[in-house]
Length: 117
Image (cartoon, rainbow, N blue to C red; front, side, top):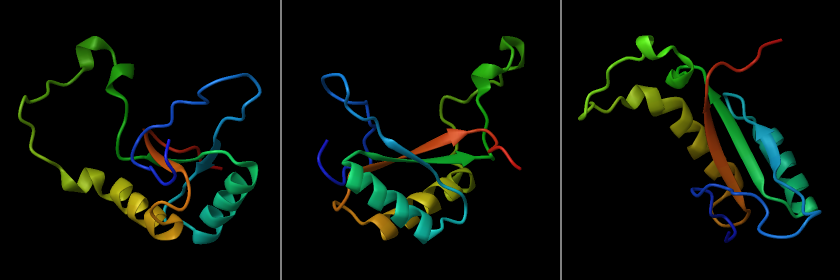
């Protein structure tokens, strides 16, 4: 994957045993720049991909619901910009902090509720 190609997914090491996987960073909201820069520095030092993961608490996985409880979906659903707001803001903030093309990183938006202390 070319450096800074942060919109594509990371599919793991391409060959051989013993290659390190990605450095996974759980990104909270709001995004703390010092945390992201520290993770980026560690990923660069280890020469591994930085995988940033953001858990969107406003969504959930419908496939975990019983089949009878799955809601019907429109073939032409209206866009809900509010639903993508937190993830879009996280992506923009990460791009500001990490830049475009300087480091190999991706953002994964996960559904559910992040564990709390």
